[in-house]
Image (cartoon, rainbow, N blue to C red; front, top):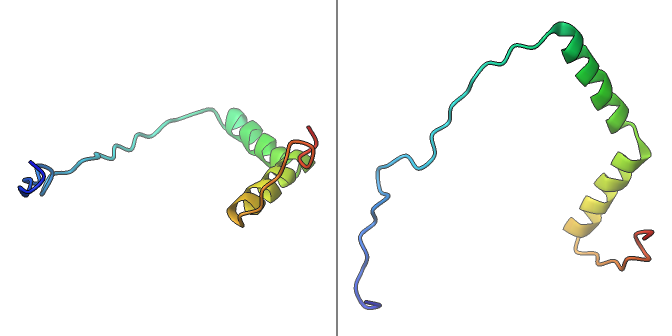
Length: 69
């Protein structure tokens, strides 16, 4: 079993099909979502989350007290 070369059963097949659908929503709802997104992006909590993600990506390790818990 380990010495034999296995046949690639996925060769030439599309594993993931991408389907795009159009969703129509009222303009008022769209504008409200945009406004909420802007408020979120400008919040201190969101900026703290981005800082936390960059620190983790940089390999820094923290304890719960470092994070304010």
